[in-house]
Length: 271
Image (tube, rainbow, N blue to C red; front, side, top):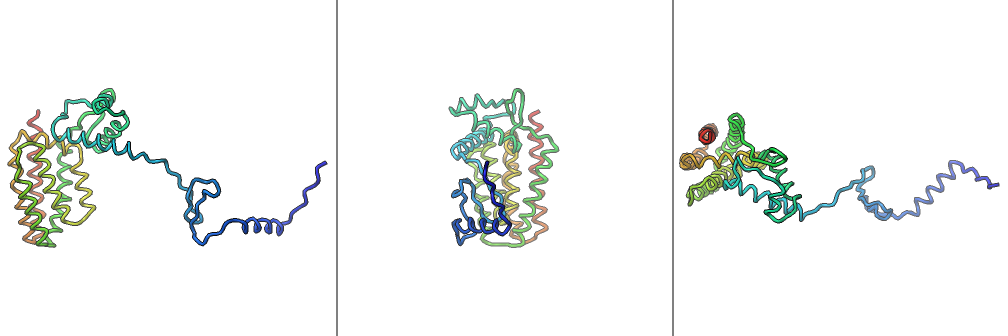
């Protein structure tokens, strides 16, 4: 017969718990590593929930970024057109890499609106309709117009001179290709937004210009005289230098609207 376990009253229980507590390691810091107790987590404060993270694979992520950059370069150069189908197995074989980073790059481009899924899981360039192009340019006008107001109200001589230099340099194109035009135009307009000093407006600018058809749309412009779009940027600098915020907004809006009309003309010239 097993001996009876003596009843331990509530005060005795507390004494046992206190004794166990006194034997635990003490620290003056609020934070402690739980690894001493076989828990692979870091607990920062009392009441915090344990945080668990999956391991990061930086090498694969860098490879996916390289695939992404190569695809973007091919799109802006016109090497990938609306009729082309992008198959991850074929791309992986051409690049002599596994399909995983290729799939990640293709899915990223789909999420950004550059590509869309076509038949049998392949991808193709997403083509905007007229309404989507209009909305894209309306967004540009809102962001860049506000930056123009900021710059005009500031009238910083250093900013104005820097903008003039960027316009002179980028408009001196050495080649009349759609890719050269796209890069020059993007750098000029981004310089205005960057000079405004608002990082949220800059993020919106990059998102708008990074949309799918910012690349394919400009690839169609080579059928139109590129000189129609270049040459007017110095006027944008002049209106900022005048200090007239209202006029700056109007001039920037008109400039972007002219770009919209040119883009619609280029799109319909493909039909």
